[in-house]
Image 1: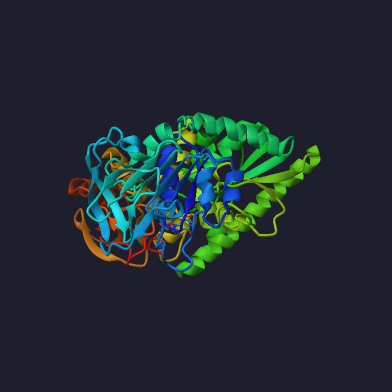
Image 2: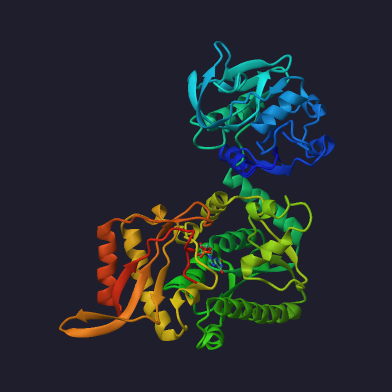
Length: 517
Ligand code: XMP
């Protein structure tokens, strides 16, 4: 792999993604690894990320000079660039000139290397205080900026390169080109990391892990569990049983989508636990959001355990016990919980709604090296329909937290209709990809006066909550076209009995969360 050494920036993940966008496999490793440990991973190339430190700060992470003697191509970015200069005998100066944001970088006449194919003046994204003032011996200066006399350098013979700016952020206009120049020209790598290869490799690996054993997998209706299940099904066929708990809090067509579309696309063996009764009776009369969430979480575990027990009993009869549990853990989860070394499994349990810690399964996590967009690509490669693969996020507790007030079947039915209309119109307008998600919320305890036909109505409001977001941590309300909003409002008030008003939520996050509960 290409190893991205993380110097404590949020940029490391972004760098790893950009490398993969160039169809080269990359992994993130912490900067606390020794040179020996890094080299033991047999990296095809190494990228040193940016970080918040100054090389002058006490305890600033260092790079051992021996890393540059191993013959492995290295690319230093921002802090990584300075640490590299420092380790190799260049000078890192406190220029007193800070550069943040868009900056003009000027190429040195005649010097190209990793800046080949890029205009002599390019807009780059900077974020630094110190600057490299003289390059190490044997290095050629490739570019400079107002605040960084040495903004990029190269030692072609030793295959060592670096830039002061952040090529991984989109604001650096030719960032991806610089990165690809390093990967393909500088390091001589081939762009052979493709979804086809991922599938083949994972199928092989899962077969080796599972042998003749049996596995189960919880399906949530979300992208990750669907793709993980499809991948494992591809590898071991009927040795896998998928479990889908229908808690009755799903949107229109969702249960059918799992039962029909998923099975049709994968041929997976599906165990549907129809648990609508269980959830509805447990939720009866409950209005407090956190209480609802806890009840749904608890009942989910019970429902899953009941399903698991039934499958185990059946498996015991055939003599092959269920030993494996498939989880849709993604790479960001792994990285965030400690770089994949050691106990990274705690978080993955969330993917099936919080399985008990004492469950004695061996985990199969076929997506643990992948980012979300790669998971979608693998899903498409496996033949999963776009409705599953391109799905917008939907909370595990489902419509239970989109009914403000107590949950009952009548209210669920009403919300399902309103939600289906809003979704259909959004899709028809071609705007699915313009919003992150669009919760539709029923204010079940609020009523307002309306007039419909010749009569007075006293009905419930429906709230539309379209948001745009990068990662759901922050969000803004989506500026959907008025005519689309008008169509949705018309249709919902006309077609859904009991609703006489549609309102638009124009709150960003913060202060509002995306969901209302
Ligand atoms: P909030 O409401 O916290 O939501 O702004 C952030 C994102 O998380 C989703 N969400 C959940 N997803 N289980 C989930 O799987 C949950 O309990 C849950 N609660 C919120 C929400 O839809 C949004 O995408």
